[in-house]
Length: 257
Ligand SMILES: CC(=O)[C@@H](O)[C@H](O)COP(=O)(O)O
Image 1 (spheres, rainbow, N blue to C red):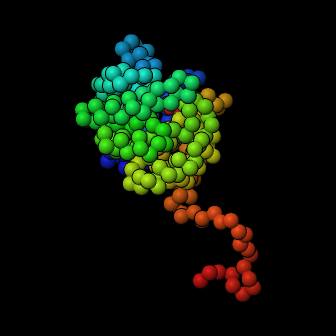
Image 2 (image 1 turned 60 degrees about the vertical axis):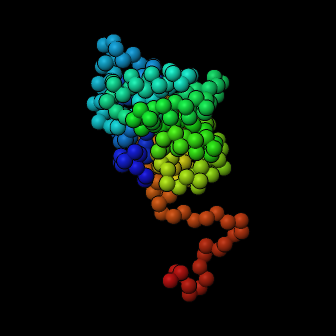
Image 3 (image 1 turned 90 degrees about the vertical axis):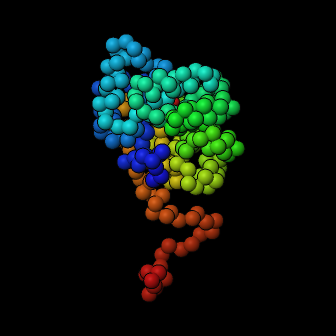
């Protein structure tokens, strides 16, 4: 697995912290799954009141890498301000940058995203941009200083999985050295496994775990699938072929060697 701004993660499971039935279930989902990164929205949780402080403390106590995000920001200014607040609260340079451009799909405003990425990178942030699978935008984000890209699987909260396999595969092939994370829209562990099999370095998801009937069990299922997908990828999977090929050996030739 590629490093994220020089940080090697124990696994490719990045888990969101919103919408759980209770803080105890959230904590247990992290503990049992071993997810290595927790992403936190500063705009949804109040950082100043007592409940907000307790929530931040609980996240810190999970002992995982914290990736604050700018979820809910619609302008460059909002996103940049939120990133600054996040750096103060969590004492980290990491920021998952979201600049939402369209309400029905929560599609990123890629123009605002590139601008905000440049401003934050120049200010010393290590930016994880939530983007589409557009290769031109990806290039602009890299030029703006991003060293990680996070293309969407599908719209946030949709659970539709990997909507554009061609685009996601092309992105992996086009940027072989860039750490890539599928962010958003993942509904099932099998989709997360497929992302890792494509050669992605991590998967970030929230809704599919938090909204499951049993979030803890679902988090473990995702952790298992992500590990399996990564293991399969490094085992050099076979190339699919159009024609049949007998898998039963001819007599007297059981092995290739
Ligand atoms: C938590 C977070 O950062 C979300 O904005 C993220 O994109 C996850 O999306 P899903 O809820 O679709 O998994």
